[in-house]
Length: 607
Ligand code: AGP
Image 1 (cartoon, rainbow, N blue to C red):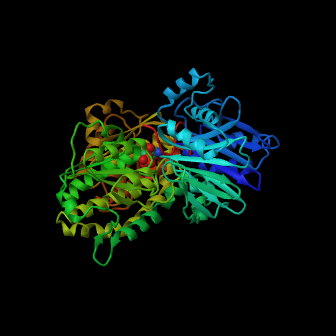
Image 2 (cartoon, helix red, strand yellow):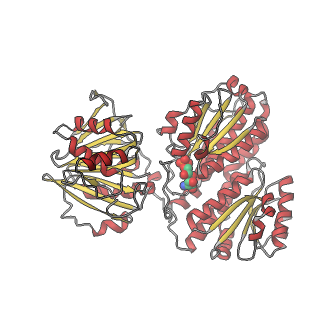
Image 3 (cartoon, rainbow, N blue to C red):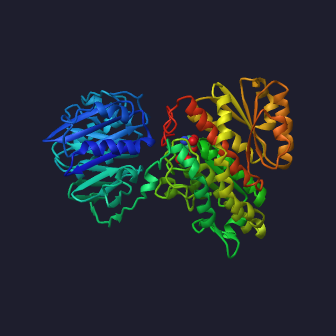
């Protein structure tokens, strides 16, 4: 995923572009660049690296101008480099373009253009758009954009400047979000509302195959057939607090600390206190639909797939309905006919993950019902599914998911209860209510347990490898905890179902391979105690995450992080918090870039 920003107005474009790139850099940050238009000339600065390192060296005199575009990149076609950074341009320098998404037919178009004498300088698909726009341009920006759209397949958002269109931005949306921000005497275009903060007071979201021609006075929007589209812009309100880090050193830490409030909001939004039922008003499936299901497939990627793993177990246990997690990237290869008795639940923070979206499309093609458990309403997965469960986690800027994961778990647990109720298990919510009411405070106490986690971080931060073990609903906790450690500290960490450890991975156990054991409850805890002893018998260092009522785990582990005791189906939501904090503290000791880890992006919009 990449970030696009454009500005045209009465002020200097460069500072707006640099700030916009900074606000969008969570989307991708391996390279950045700007182009400014002045007196019919287009001036470009771009390079590999992060905006905060690049911008100070950019020449403000050379980049003076009141119209410009900017970009922050997560490389898909072509490695991170100056030549592959955006903006991309045509050979004559008449056009510059920035792009988010993928041009599916870039090879065929490259060959066609090369045969016509066009010389390419980059490895990107984006450069094709610049050449097409330049060769199609006869003066009319809408006709030109339509001509480009007609030749291109894929999902992309584009923003063009042409030196013969002074003061004008040409925006095109096909599949990837693009917003037009309207201000006073200035207008912006951006991939995400965050980059409009403080400048635009109204916003127009472009729809599929729409073209916007944007000048300081305003914007005209056109459909793919060229017809003018009139649509009222919406008032743009943004919560300053959610746009700032609120004094925290990293977004990731801020978002870990936000979890109690986010979970409290979710409990309040999702439980009808009068009728004691789960409220999922946008689910789109009736009780009869839910009662007729024969299986639920939960699809997701990365952290979302681990939340889906937990959700599958909860649906099986609480609703008595077969359920499984399938990684989004594997789902469309399944040789199965589905049908309306199969429910496919897409779990996604961004709603833009290509693997998960492909799974939804495959499920719909096979006749299944579809629901999204998502953190983004205006997303392509949200538009693709029938039913919608908003996880209400708010914008998550840290590339490694934290608050979104716990909000996904709670949302999926409540979905499991809703399915159980619809299938005749009317009292399904009752035993969970006390734990749900106690959950926000329990997470608050787990976050406050950071000092004990810092002690653990001091012991393990030099490790090169780690094992994470969990059972039952905490298998997901183990694999998610391991992913956090991988993502932000770059330690090779593997999460396993604890019972599996003795069937091979135990060969890895040694003092310098710390094992994190999520002790769980009841029978799971009893067996975890055996697994911990198997690790200790081989001189393994064990860090136990254990409930306060667990008197045995402290006796068998080397290091201990205690968490409040909760209902076994709610406990995994609090068990993951020390693992999030551990990854954070270790990464800090290792000097890693916590909010924007190397090679990652907030959402992967390519398959
Ligand atoms: C999580 O820490 C990672 N950033 C990554 O695994 C992420 O969960 C995955 O790419 C799915 O993203 P989504 O939830 O936006 O679909």
